[in-house]
Image (cartoon, rainbow, N blue to C red; front, side, top):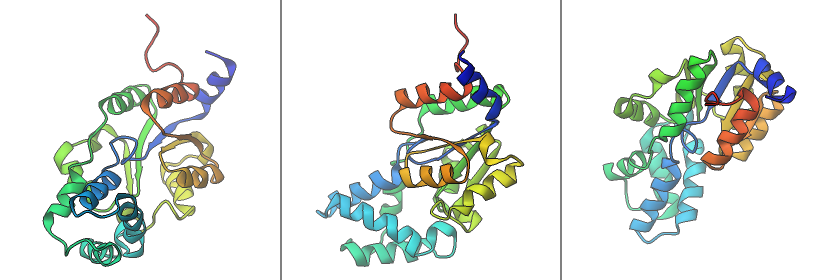
Amino acid sequence: MSDYTQNRTATVRAILFDFGGVLAEEGFREGLKALAGRFGLDRDKVYLEGAEAVYASGYVTGRGSEMDFWQRLCRQTGLPPYEESYTAEILNHFHLRPRLLEAVGTLRSRGFLTVIVSDQTDWLDRLEARYRFCREFDRVFNSYHLGKGKRDPSLFTDVARSLGLPPGQTLFIDDNPGNIERARAAGMEVILFTEERTFFHELERYIGPLRPAP
């Protein structure tokens, strides 16, 4: 292990994972695109409008309801009035990534705090009821329950404070470049997740090999 990696390993004490797009496939994006395709609408437009509507409606921070979100999105995009299959489409597109969860278990066994930091609604609670993944983590921070999302830079310092760590001892992993930049500005170490192979290479720069050499 290089001196560089040894220094990072000694510094980082908590690994913070985004949920959709990192621990699981991005069900929100892919579910909305599937809905758009079902009704012959522009897939990218529906997703981008959804990303704004979930904030503008207050749903992502628990200040608005799921129906507030759907009514706003249907009005903005031309989706027909809400039906339960819309929510099911999104939830069914969140597929957990086994290699990521295996890595979480390895990190936790080595003494790192493992944490979810997610811009999710109460859909995360429903996914937990379905998959039971939260037991693999020491803490879960969900915007819906925090009343604050990742677009607010103070969320990152709040999370570090709640963990009892300076931001520099946390490693934040997300697939959203804006979230990565806000976490970096707060003093966190960061990895922008693009795909699994690159991610594991980047992670080992901070924590050393995930598995001992044979």
